[in-house]
Image (tube, rainbow, N blue to C red; front, side, top):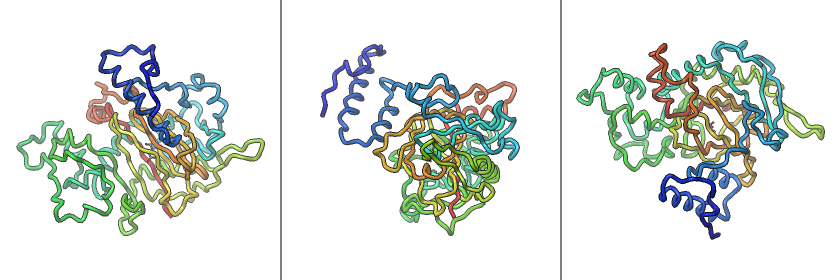
Length: 390
Ligand code: SIN
């Protein structure tokens, strides 16, 4: 183990208390002690550390190009979508100023990022549907592993509680815990559900904060990392339309270097079929470890992913965890597509960035119906990702 002293912890940093300083020192020591950690893991640790806060200067920012380091500016390539997304689907809202603008990175071929693809009102609409319409049966969620979730969904219950329509005295107020003694769900599709140690019945306003993911279309078996072919539910229309529009817009999009390296996405957009999707609901302290999405039979079709609510640090690496990843800011309204070689790349979300909720997603006296959704995204980030399986 390498010795770490308090001078290794940013000496210019003023700590609020001796306790904070000690914690920062402990974090620095534990980071240095992982001598055999992969490049990806080391980077995850850096961005997950809260005390002292990490240095964000190396994070790629597609929305504020001027704030990037020269090294990052050298790898960013400005490219053009084949179509303006708003011409393909009304779900993107009003068109952006530079309607076809998107980016890739020279050293991560196959990545396409479309900043601010959705207008503010379009973002609100998708957030609503992700919470109200999609977080319920037949789609499965992490909550189904432990709770007898009502068919109306946990959001519906939370809304009733918030409006004062149900109280703890009502029999439907508390979602009961599953009797795990005779449940087939102890293993099976829910095998990888978060290891909850303090499971208890909770008021809907607390249970909604435990919602981590839902799966739609082909249901995913987290245990053996395959799709359950016998469990295919209708794919949500709005999410499917958005992903299909992105697939059309990124057809023929990419970048080839002078030496012939690089990648241009040749997947025919009209052939893209949204067959399986995951909606991730992150609370501010949540993260998603490095992984590769490789359960799809069809690895040629792009994976389409979009972000809502708080911003995050997204890490994109290579085909092994030893490839040093690049860190990218993803903000509400951004679309990211992984095409070709990028489909095989490790990626993850080590950090949700506090205090980054855009003003237009906060409570607004002119839009009282939005208040309940604002109260959720006020402490959350939502990611929707869509894949073609076959
Ligand atoms: C994922 O890779 O499954 C989610 C990525 C994200 O949250 O942006």
